[in-house]
Image (tube, rainbow over all chains, first blue to last red; front, side):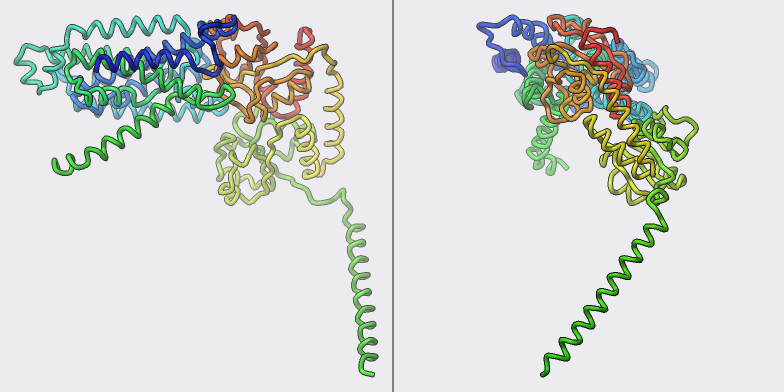
Length: 316
Length: 283
């Protein structure tokens, strides 16, 4: 599986670098082609990969926190609250500060969910999930209200929300890379604890795992990853859900395999979907990448539902 | 023997028919004399759902006929605001009892909305400067302001006479929105403005706006990269400061969205303005 993932990552990167709106001969490049490759395409491909890795990792972490395989940045409300921050920046005409607004929105949402879900210092996963859904609904309503107020700017909000990597720069790549490194390294030593966390809280606590502290750490790391991703690329759905699911289907269940594999799988998936988004139309036109990821995600979940229909029937 | 009386009857019927036609024609002529064209029926109460139209109505001397506008229409003060151009309030519209509603497009004011108002709908959706003139003429006719409409058309045509020829045809990309990058396509009024100013929009996409790759911009190598600033592109990062455009040798020009992107009277001034920019003059 590791080999397959590494090959998929390498293939996605090579394909993403080789193809695009402009045909580039990588072996003998003109000056313009070199500029396109290094100023536009490479930063974009890297940002796509990094956002994919960040979203997939945040999805896995949220699933550990909530003990729910359907949890991701959407169900926890972090995505929507980040988007709310970003849309506020668009409305106020503060585009250069958009990532900061998204980050602030994400952290505010995270704090709110955390406060609601914690009782006597302990996080309740179910309450957190419900609080996340409420926050998500509230943030979506606020975004709709801002769209209504924006009038002429409504299309700029809609297009931004659909997600994309057009504004990729090496600085953004570097910052997101640092965020991923910090988040990943902060949970890297907790592989065994994460596996134990899959049992009930009493069992996990009896083995010496500080369940509450671990959940807080995972939650903050995941929210940080989501906020930066939304700030740099808009709302891109389903990555945090389908990548961990696919990897679990490939028997990567243990945290020590699942977390690094999520990074690689998310990066490969997002580079490939971004490649589709920027090459599917003619004349240099692009589709929002969120449209592609959501379409693939929807089809994948439909497939899972149909495939598992029988098991679910007998289980009921 | 039998055919003769029939022939006689036919002649009498023909004569009767001729008399009827003559009477009808005389009636029509009398009507036209009694109600000359100048006092022909015209619209008196107008709701404007497309802000670019209001300055035209003002120029036609129809300011007092405007009973309602959208909230983003700042050309006309002290009228009832009936919501946005995409979501007008039907109750308010009906309360104003307009006899004419001017909307931007069928998409903005669809058939189901038409059925809910008791007014005629006129769609104002020109994509070239010539089409703007055609629409002005039509509006003038509908409001009984033909003469003023012709005068306005003449004035706008004269305005275009200020445009001077250029030694070469500069190529242009017009940024509608920075993030994600949306540019003006062939169906945008901007393409016509650029053409009138002596330039050429090099984005050959048969749409009003298109999301395109920044790679494509670098490949097209425009002489001028015009970026609008306004409601659709609020305070964008100047293109010259965007890292992915550092190799782009175009001249970056900032323009006002309301002047360039709205297909109204302003579009003619925008063409003259742009021509000056192409000539290297300070606008």
